[in-house]
Length: 341
Picture 1 (cartoon, rainbow, N blue to C red):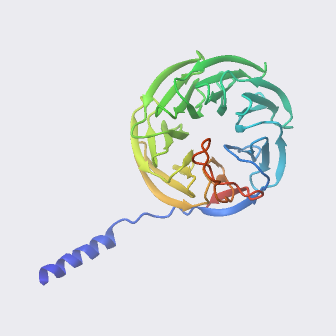
Picture 2: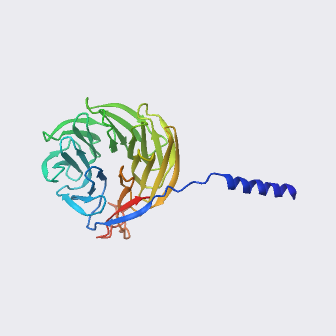
Picture 3: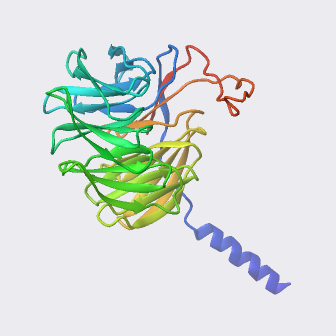
């Protein structure tokens, strides 16, 4: 009996002194109802102008990040996935997946300045690479990247990637890192030579999607479809850490001001990861958001996270052409969630 009592006491004391996971303090603090029809994909925040660029299927809606008020739009971007900004030349570009094109626009007026055809079908992610002053699209159907000179409004070259590219980041030194979804690899693209400089496996990551960078400590954060975030050394390709996240991730972000990394999970959660050191990471919170909130943009000034989603109705009946149809978006319910402290 005494032995049993001592076991209980030890267990209770151990529980009392064990460090509990602390909340990050993040929660949904505001909602910007934008309405309208159609789907959505990537978000992009311009911290200087406080503009949030929201892709909406056939156009890009631009809103004030602090109030949700509309500031304008970029029309005629069929199947738009993403937006890239080149502040040094005052231009931006959209990746239009449906017709395989890029719309070049003026960042002040949002007026279209030209249109360029990509060298591969379904341009998806798009980034600006400052060292070469070029925009790169990552073309899912073409399994390649297209380099575009924004001032000339012309294609500067093509790079074969050996698989279906997903998201990409450009640290500004002439390299671009891009996830290859179907091979579960990370490719390093040399933007100056227009060539693949390295190719690294991401195991145990499967079907990588979101990608973000901690430039100060040289760490990449990869969102994986098998409910993992892997942290990668961009100098060697070494997988430094793996962490559990929610399902249906499509975006990650890193906040250098707080040392927190985020994954936006379409199941309706935001996973918050703390960078304890460049080789040590821990999940500190799982924040409820809303179903479908799978892409994100980080505000480095306020440390808020923006998410896009809508309400969903039931999925239509399966057909031979669509054996697993997606749930139908309820018209007029599209919303931007602001997750902050």
